[in-house]
Length: 141
Image 1 (tube, rainbow, N blue to C red):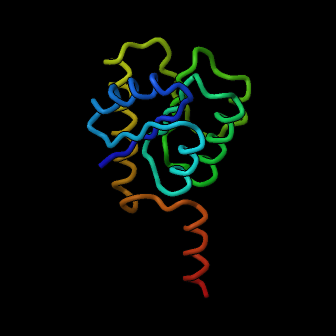
Image 2 (cartoon, rainbow, N blue to C red; image 1 turned 60 degrees about the horizontal axis):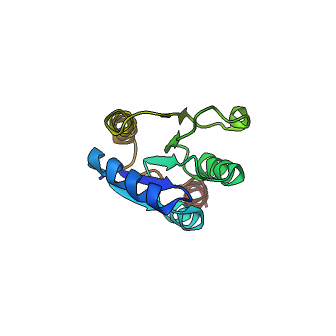
Image 3 (cartoon, rainbow, N blue to C red; image 1 turned 30 degrees about the vertical axis):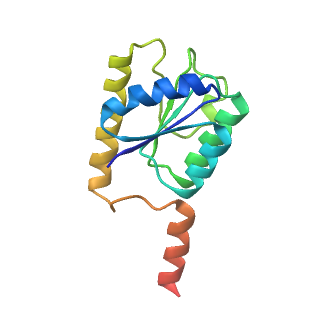
């Protein structure tokens, strides 16, 4: 089953986004920044949605974490404008700002379809780069 992680700082907005994102049929986790980091360190998510309520430094931190350990994940920034730091982000980013819930769900479903079709050509779930590197070294030795 596809997995979505939504991270933000407003509990009410996170709950609303979770209800909307569940319309995609994916397993949805909705959490604040610290708990979101813990989840990202432990498991893979097909799509990671970052809310506009996150501090910029937290958004950048999560973007860098995804680049390093989960490059196959799709990143969605719910922001009005592309942030000035975006050129430093080596991740594909989607900006669904001021869209109604139905259009938001359509965009996320499209991203999930892309991720799942790519995943079908690879292992069931990607390994984090750190684990892949460790596994590759174990095979060599």
